[in-house]
Image (cartoon, rainbow, N blue to C red):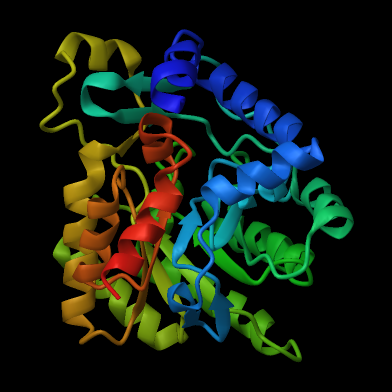
Length: 345
């Protein structure tokens, strides 16, 4: 139904408008008891063999929703009905911000990719906390992806991350430190060894003061060199980080089928979807081999089919996440990946 009916309609709309319409339709469907029940039966795959115990948490299956889809914690209940094993919300910042001017999200249909320069648009951490207090269902694993405000200089970035960490701590199961988005000026400079070590050390100090510390992961860019990836592994070891998410969007435009004129007209932004699949998997494989499998990795980037998910798991990922792939493959992608995993058991 998605490929033949919904997708052609949605692709006539701007990507951002289509996103909001899709979420609204999903929520409306799930509000009807019988429709919601049928919907869950169609898309959810429940089997104990899919469970993964990672970071001290039990994930009902290894397929998660990547950050960026539900920036404000408004849609995680609805998205859970698609069969996700976990939902990552955010990126959230201490104070709400509008993000970059529209248009800021673009489709590349020939490449099954997206370019976005959203710019951490969100309503702020306190608004997210209110929603988590009121709506969070038991048993749903939620990750909090945290960032800094655009106006906050890098020298004060640690404060922004700490504010989000403290506010969300009672309401999420794990944290992701996002220093790899290309859409906040200067943010990727925080991936350098010295500032990143300082940031993660401070968050771990806050974490270890809690009665029950929570997993903290770092989300990295696919554009890092092997030397930079080596530094990342060293930082993970030094700060006793729980794991990595590999990878965020890329600033590269290499190998695209879309015409250079179209790509140039779109302008700046992070490229996601199928074009980043190969590089993302390369990074996962490198990190896994270099660490002798000692670093836990969540693989994300270009998963548009069950085969793509299996590829990342084979490369060394323990869990995977999807987002852009659903735009092209539809909501059945999560179900199909889980079925493929069961067929391998």
